Length: 118
Image (cartoon, rainbow, N blue to C red; front, side, top):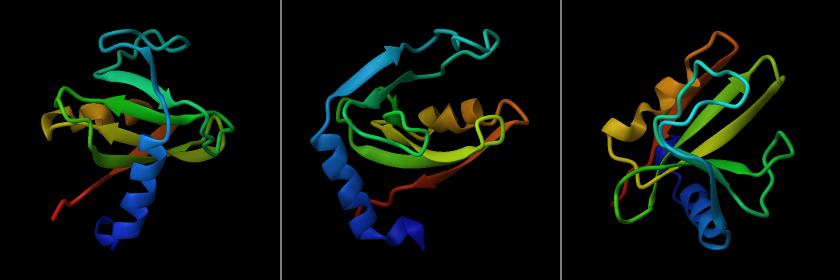
């Protein structure tokens, strides 16, 4: 199972630790194109990384003081015709509402894969 794949999580940790996190949409702000959609958490990206959409890897930032990788959301967007991951850093169980954010429209849906720390 993906949750048990230690190396997968280690490689993501490496990307996070080796990149600057840039927040470009603060919690409570509206999506630039879909104004009815409000960001439930700070949202940004890992600078100098690349995702399947040729943009940087997306991140949601929670309120936990330690910004450990807690989960990933895997999305499919039929408007953009792509699939990508969004990293959740420092998110509590309640803050995993980022999944609800990703599932607000019929055009994009995501699944949450939580990390299990041992």
